Length: 321
Ligand SMILES: CC(C)(COP(=O)(O)OP(=O)(O)OC[C@H]1O[C@@H](n2cnc3c(N)ncnc32)[C@H](O)[C@@H]1OP(=O)(O)O)[C@@H](O)C(=O)NCCC(=O)NCCS
Image (tube, rainbow, N blue to C red; front, side):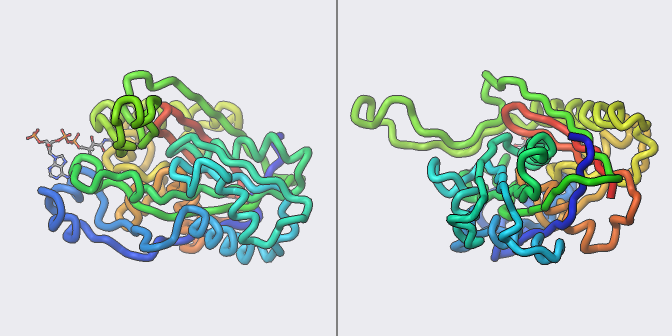
């Protein structure tokens, strides 16, 4: 469905702000290196909240922004690569926390890594014929799967959640684009359980996040540009006509490369990765809510969200504010 509007958005920060200087104490790195190579200065890490707790807080914030009661939500979509459990789904836990048990509400999880929120909005736009009000959340506790002895990855990621509420619209359009390609080489992969139980081969390590940074960087440049162009085609506008781009907050150098390649003003890109780091599925959702909080979203603006991540997955959303 194309006639879709966002009626509220919100976010939740994890409890502890961890600065680059704090990481200097645990791995061989420096604040200067991290800032220069990534643009990140800090990230928020959870102390005792799990993904569903952050997701719930973001949902409450979005409901407040929409001036809406939880009971109006008919579907909850949670995008996460770090759910509380394999099962039950994090969305079901959020449903319970929102007090929606027994109500006419359905809950479903999505895993598209850092593209998760874009995939969530895409699914929501397809499902609005059936569900009138959909809560889309991106939520992560990546600190659970980050190897805190690996300086190549641990400096990049943070925890957090962002949420938005979507409904059908009479005058606003939303266009979406998604793409997935099997990453059989394992260029970017999270923790997994071994196929053979420890009983057979003694394997116990569930594994941590693993990443080939340079390969991911190359993929990200192409994926972000492609996602922006694909949704612009659908909206019948040129990328230069977009008022604000909210990209996945992975690395400022990725954003700058894309801006330069597409000949777009860097100011068109909303950036908050210096504060939050890369929060995967939550990144674009948090950025959207922060942009709103900072008064950067004005009625009638043409906004494009662009994500990429493990899978590989990528995608974009064009929306009108
Ligand atoms: C990870 C990333 C920041 C690394 O930056 P880079 O410029 O490619 O750096 P390199 O990997 O070439 O490393 C350069 C040197 O810095 C070192 N280095 C790596 N991490 C470091 C750190 N945290 N602190 C200090 N030095 C570090 C490397 O070991 C290497 O040293 P060497 O030259 O002696 O071998 C960058 O590749 C990146 O952002 N990739 C995309 C990652 C991403 O977005 N992932 C999520 C996708 S959803």
